[in-house]
Image (cartoon, rainbow, N blue to C red; front, side, top):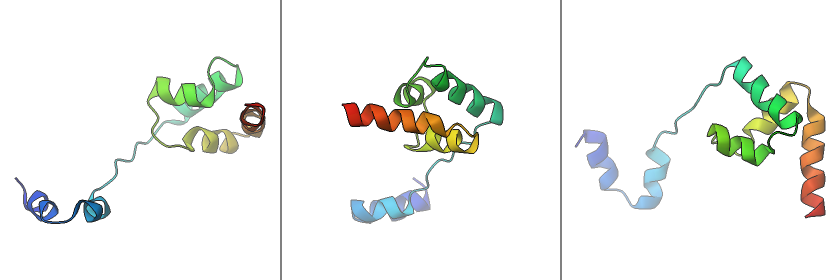
Length: 84
């Protein structure tokens, strides 16, 4: 057991989350473009693409779509939410 693990084991579980580091995944531009284009083509919904490609962030694909100038994908996903 490392010193950090010993330290964390002494804390209440609520405080442990403050000290744990999150893993940040970096995606290539080509990967982002592929995922967004597959959502645009209707192959996947945003939530399906997240699951298929194991993308953790809740807003990650939506941010990519905005940065790639594909805001119409965001409008489509909010329309689907309004219908449901």
